[in-house]
Length: 479
Image (cartoon, rainbow, N blue to C red; front, side, top):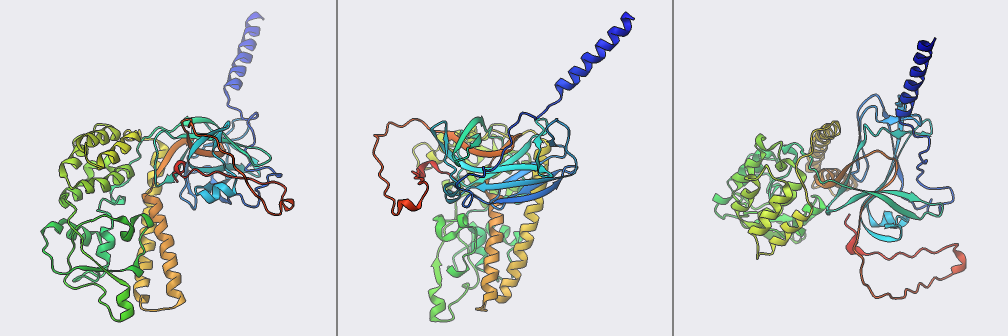
């Protein structure tokens, strides 16, 4: 009898241990985007919706470039049981100043100012009921940026019934690097491809190809001047940050058998601009060698190095590039520091000092999230290039037509170019296991500013229930 009692007691203890070890979410707050009394309901950034199958791995991408990797089995109900079937994902991206202001997404944490890098809202539901993220299978989130800053953290957002935001529980972002296929990286000098495209058709080449670009770039420093290149400003269709008219950077000297787009009329002549470019200084064959497969699993195969390479071109010095190639076993920031020391006394030294301050380390250890992200990159890159090629072929047939169809085509072309731009941008990447408002931010040092009064004059004040006044510090916005 005593032995049977001990067995029952042992069974009860085991059951308690099993139950107590199960993760439950019954006490978690429901992470709503806003309350029904929120005064910013009409102007808050719109949500996008996706439906996924939880039995499969999923990658979703927002219109502004936010990417979320979701492993199968990542969602649980309030009792910690894995959710099966369809789950609805809600995503809102506030990556512009206007979206932040109209959504009242002020960047403060318990009254202290923050330096923002972009905000999103994320929610997951099944049949209208919130589901939760399994901490053993967290999501991986990337928020794009054109100005990546060091020391950023992920903040959890709390929004009250009046639409006021408070950002809490900062979790530092570790600057691991994510490799992507070398073929998806642009290691050419800024605007090289665009410049060559303006010289087409060239000999037997009617379209821009990797073979043509590599051939002309590799032989660039051996050419002798024959003709200057003329560019038509009305064909300026590249990504905004790669615009040759804004880049202010010499990329190399290219020469063609004939002058491109010769003026046909006085009007056409006004649309042309004659330029002469000089050789960039770094051996092109050395740059082309960066696409060697031996660099695939190093920091060379990252967006972070791609950005540094454009500054390396400005040094016109092969040996500076070799500092990275000879120190692949180091953290990327350590190589940045070595380059900054080598360039001491030159203006570019500060550029590489800023790079080193980002503290980009080395490649992230392979995980399921990273593998899914790389697969998504490949599919997106292939589709974007296919779409661009189709539009370019159609535009070539319509380039002399002055009608609405051509204008519509050019508008669509720029939209597809933005998809390529999102792919080339760097991002803040992190694993996360909560839903709700998320902010990429960091605290700023206290300033000893003299306090000044601020008077706000409102006309027809009786027409408004409340007035919100914003002070926007442009130096603290990096999105």
